[in-house]
Image 1 (tube, rainbow, N blue to C red):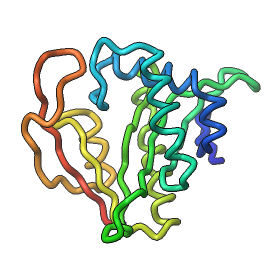
Image 2 (spheres, rainbow, N blue to C red):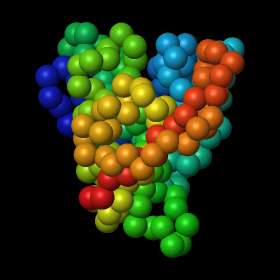
Image 3 (cartoon, rainbow, N blue to C red):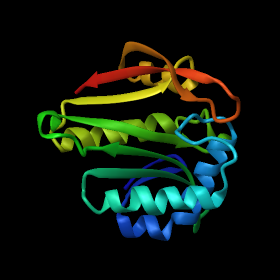
Length: 183
């Protein structure tokens, strides 16, 4: 566990994900409804978000090939709110075991601009180094605030793929920027 100011970072296990399922679903739901282009489109319910965490992520956490980091803020000495998350996917083919992929960086819309996303990314990068990974890759919507964050963290822009993913709110296809960072 790492703590700075009022935000605490933790890595969740498969069982801990189950214990935090509702909070994770609420976070994902809020981010998608705020326009985050993270693979989901409207309509998107809290039940859809629960199913994602339960059916897609929980089994992957059991393999020790995917790592889930969460950020919590404390409103009082014993009440925490889950406000952010990021995943480090290390389930790579045999010729790519030197790399990992960042997925689903999310910070609740009410808690953005406080350094939480940066801290989550740094924690994922630290885990990648612990695992002996020398390269991290990711994709993000071109022109997004997330793209600027990744660039500020030292990621290199490889370019954009046009019409990569559908916007969660509008009937349009957005480009995605592919980025990497050597560790």
